[in-house]
Amino acid sequence: MDLPLSKPGVMTEMDQFMFECFGFIVIEDVLTEAECDEALEASKRLHASQGDKNWLQIGKGFEHEPAIASLIDHPALLPKVRALYGDNFVLQSAWCTAQRAGSQSVGWHQDGSGAYDFKKLAYPVPLVQLRATYHLTDQTQPFMGNMILIPGSHRSPLDLPASMRKEIYACPIQQILLAKRGSVLLFHNGVWHSPMPNNMTWDRYNMHFIYSPPWVRRSDRDSTDSEFLEHTTPLRRALMGDYERPDVPFGGGFPKIPFENGNGDH
Image (tube, rainbow, N blue to C red; front, side):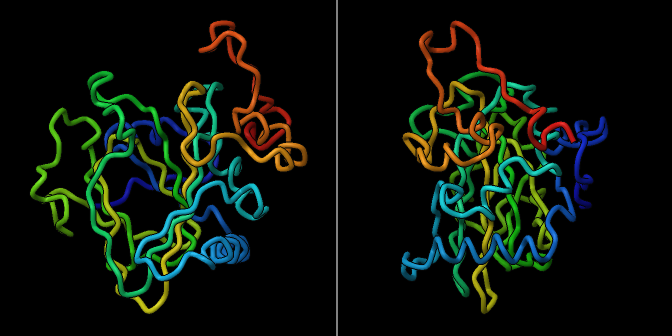
């Protein structure tokens, strides 16, 4: 099965059609080799003290790593997020993940909340978490810690059978994402997915940014570091969602995000 490939920048009508059909699109050539190197080194610093666990996840790395913060509103990506959400959304969380060399952590799932299954909200499951995954290491061959996805599964009212959720090949229609370094996977929270084993001799690194409606609780932090907020751009500050809410939950509206001062209009 061919990938639903997109180009950096504007979300075209074809991009939107493919996203609705597959539940995801892949944007190639987003980061240069130099940008990948910078983000990868930052990711390695974040994980340096985490030990030898097979699969690691660290949140809010953007607070202390500029190379990661620069990806929050990347001009190749943000116009597509706006096309899907409109102008009212926040960065719910940012997770840097590492799949250690020679390890596996297969576990099929949908993104969401352990406290309340998003499928209970409506059918089809609403877009509550839009995930952008930057591939910081090569994943162009199977068993490189790739993402595995079931296209269109965000439209299914039925769950993937529990008996198959630890299997690498869980479903006949699944797709192994063969992603170039520097590409971005943009996908719907309802798509069933899993990491593939990493049989390589090096660790696999991905950087995930999760965008959500402003009323969704942040999952990688209770609040954003005050020093980061003081020194970051107005656009990134707004996307953090750190603002007064006298009319909880947003009964008085939502503060306008200053897209005109950042990359979002490009």
